[in-house]
Length: 422
Image 1 (tube, rainbow, N blue to C red):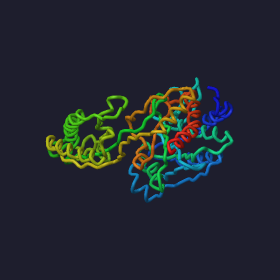
Image 2: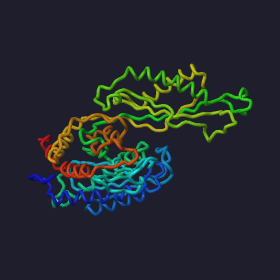
Image 3: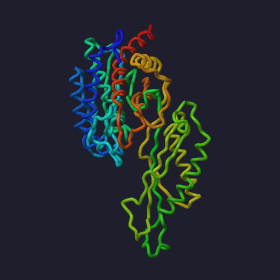
Image 4: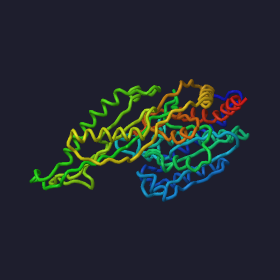
């Protein structure tokens, strides 16, 4: 890809790309696994140094421990750090990226999860696409802009946050709660795929169900009440009830894949005897989880009421007493990004690619923290197919392209936002 009239020079683009590759390798090597967060401070220090070297104003925000204890139920006790940088003035274009990742997991064949490897035009490692690659592309784009020698055409912000993988309450959620006003425009370099961005996402409701029985010795099981068997009956009844409800409900938004256009509930992601069972003991309690995904027309509150009603009915049919609680929730999001989408389309075209109309993400993002406060937002980044998978990697061509797009975006957006005010 060469430079075009009015765009960044070839030299600036290559310098930005080289920096993004360097940063990505350093980030992958830091095992910022959520929810434990053993190395969050190390990652935050690296990212703060990167932004400071780009002549940005930088603040490293430590999430207060009392807030963390009360609001971030799935987080460990390790501290959480947010890196927030800004430069320029005017309307705010805010890039948000999460530096936490899921565990490395088994099945890797090219390298180990936290040993970055550049091979065959790709960079391998956990987080390469979800979403340390997006963070690296933003830093590379900021390098390109710095080399342009002029002030940014609007205020550019970069927020690098933890805990998106467990709902973002101690990351983006805390950051947005401290802002006097939200940014006008938000881009999340999440792995949407380069064909089309996401302008929203489904919501999340994680529920933990505990079924009660009575403990007894396994040699005299008739003296107890097997909570595992009761939980099995309850979960099967619940699955039948929820499937009947959700099959009648479809979103009016375009969600890809199409099957994600209706609500879903996955039962049993985590299941077991609390505290650990024993082979020769009738389980007196048994727990299982439910992962409920909400379409944009739904709300967490309504989904929770509906889930409790379904559980009560299933409990009566199964003869299985239960308790239920919310582990994690995030509202769905949908917004009309307007000039932000048009600016992205123009930047992508100049970088050599046509971008289609945005769709709704089937999973959850941190976008809702911004859209519920009025920001125009899009998620746009590399291919999503290997996110959370073994041998996760990003194409160097994708990374180079994203550096170009993100470096062009502020200039395109400034022109369109200015025209919209006239």
